[in-house]
Picture (spheres, rainbow, N blue to C red):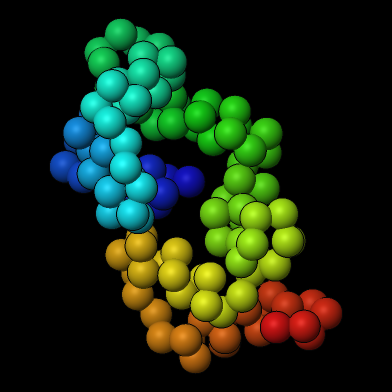
Length: 119
């Protein structure tokens, strides 16, 4: 989760601003207005500095997925609710997170954890 937080924290100051939140969502092809970004910050910011720190971010992850691991898995899922991560979906998300891998590298990563051998 710290690595995911780091993807949002564009200037590496340990906090996420509305501008950084919008920039992250734009980088994955999602539009977020300044008002929406500020609303997220207002809902999560516990120390009143108008920024999301790591503890605030953890609260968001728990609210969104109910379970940190489940939320992280769902980010990589092929089809929401399918319970499957395919090499293509893994490649897509890693690329969006700035850690591009080839399709074959993604196949190899999945093979390590694919306990039932279904790819």
